[in-house]
Length: 423
Ligand code: HEM
Image (cartoon, rainbow, N blue to C red; front, side, top):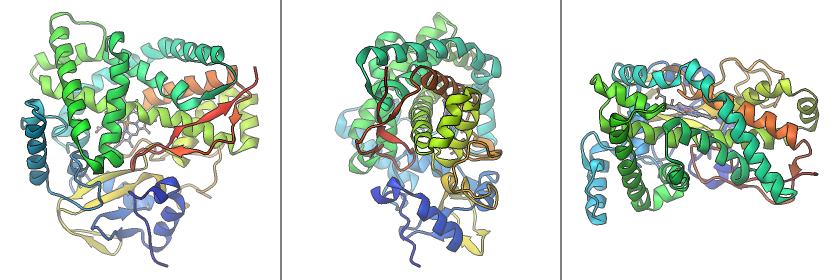
């Protein structure tokens, strides 16, 4: 059968799973018409992700620079030149133009050994103790957001009323963003992720570049301020690292930007996908309502079955023999987490949603050296959020409204999730 998988098409994005199943069965290592390769089985994905010397995260950098969105690959120099030209046209004179400018050296696009150096520094902000400290605040935020929902009546949009504000507020607190910038923070977060991974990425980069400029200006001010007046927040911690000559101001801004893109929409969609999927499985829904200690297992199975991050890009550093094919040096391979997570070889009856299964080894948070830095925070947020939701709004159910999907080839989840409940 002909393979029609195209990660950028709306039809595939609406339901990529039959395509993944076909790829795993018929073409585990496959080259798409534009030249990109796909790795759809657990075995090849995990090999690529634990071999950064062969599969470089320069693939992520190309994606972040807008070089892969049309399914064709462009080289970094051409992209950088294009971006400089757009900057000039927009009248932007900024750090974005500099060699160490935005996202060039972002943690997520570095390979070892540089990656290890940066990761060791930023890890300081994500120790179990640092994350645990946030727990009481996450509870408070979840309760307050639900209070607001209850005030408004018996209908809600889970995405905009609950799953979006919660991670945004947690992230703003983690970074130490002034509450007066809460609206800006939400806007920046949305534009960064949709500007890089949505259709606007294909249409034109102007809004994205203007937004990046705006948030870089803001975070540079925060860096300056925290140098003089350290607080109990992540930026202060990173600025302290900077003083020992390890993270520059621009790198600190890059990292804050990465967190904005990597930590908000992802957590939003984990909460949404968890609710959406459980509502489609009434028996398991009953079980969770009867026993909230099942919530962590519900979160984990959702990460496996309907993970918010479906794929990642890697670039071949040499000709690579894999699965009977040769991926030539410089080509881009897509590691399909969402497909590897349903591979029967690893997860028996992988297409079945089962909160009681063993999910060990799932790739919902990636795999290897770039394994999600925020995984424990995301798990904590989702667990607290979902526990609060099923306890205080146990009768939540879908309305007849059709589901609309968030516009992104990378992040999977609804753009709005209308629900109803009884008081
Ligand atoms: C459910 C929520 C989340 C999901 C599904 C998720 C998923 C992922 C995945 C798949 C990767 C690996 C990307 C790659 O290999 O190229 C990753 C990396 C990363 N994530 Fe998350 N993430 C989530 C939440 C968060 C949060 C809350 C934060 C921060 C507060 C965060 C920060 C990061 C960072 C900094 C990286 C890059 C790590 C590195 O390159 O070493 N993520 N995430």
